[in-house]
Image 1 (cartoon, rainbow, N blue to C red):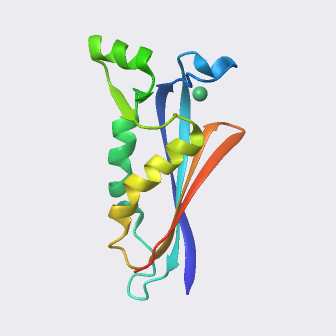
Image 2 (image 1 turned 45 degrees about the vertical axis):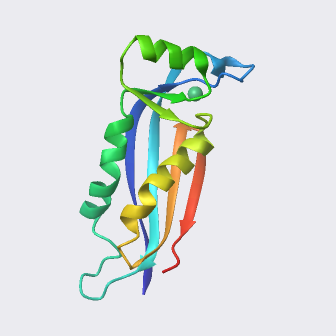
Length: 143
Ligand SMILES: [Zn+2]
């Protein structure tokens, strides 16, 4: 028997898209919502694909690391200079901080932790930047 289970997380984070010609080049923030969804086999001894407690233990540290930080793209020289002179909570990534890239970045961070849970077959990160938009990143485990 198989099932899909998911857990939702949320945090506040600042960013900007330096290349953007609309409003997104300005420093601003979002209340990010994220759904971590897994598909897998129900373990007959527990009745679970995975314990939600274990999911939270794997995901929450990343959420805590991002919460109330600025997500800075390493090619954004203006912001890199600012944070070099003004130490604040910042996370530096080597890509633009779009919803697509953030979902991919978080997925990559999560894959090693979920890998040992052999009942988990797929891992999906759905990142909502606003109420009306989301981006998804997806991984299928091959063991
Ligand atoms: Zn934004």
